[in-house]
Image (cartoon, rainbow, N blue to C red):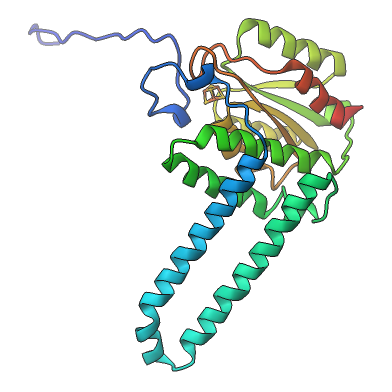
Length: 264
Ligand code: SF4
């Protein structure tokens, strides 16, 4: 080992470990003390806008390509415009049935065509559009509420050991105690998911028949998008009074309701 000058190792003490969903957080307090509680209608407004924006972009692309497409086959532009109109009509009917299911409290679509199917894609796309306008967390909060309402309507029941409770590492001590108390009361195994990948792995390995997941809006929407198509999930979002990834709290009454929805 040469006896030359040695570099200094710089240690930075951090009071939290941010999840990658919060990479761009600037350290300032979150709006409304990290409480993004929103009415479900917010999701319907933003999702309708997302669908309209998507259709408008497709129509614009088709309009610009029409002269070239006409050169390939004279009927090609009219076929493609018809396809766009048919797609728009199907989306309108589907979105309306989703809205009515939510408002009437009756499942008008099978789950594969609703909360365990294209709804997850719409939720994700809507979140991307809302993030461009700085409204991501509010819209995601509303989206998770709509998702839960649709999922609860199915009235699915499982045995105690078949339910898994997934919680994040950022819960405050008091909240964690409350969560463990509920899990103990209903005999539900609890897993602390330090990262989304681990959560997916524990689901693969333990093969629960249903999951109740706790996470912030951002982690919840990406987790539901990845998992809810494969397994029934109810999601509970959190309040982040100390900023992201630290001392989060949840509505324990709502958590108990979600556990009861599956096991009682
Ligand atoms: S669930 Fe908690 S730890 Fe995970 S990204 Fe959200 S705030 Fe951070």
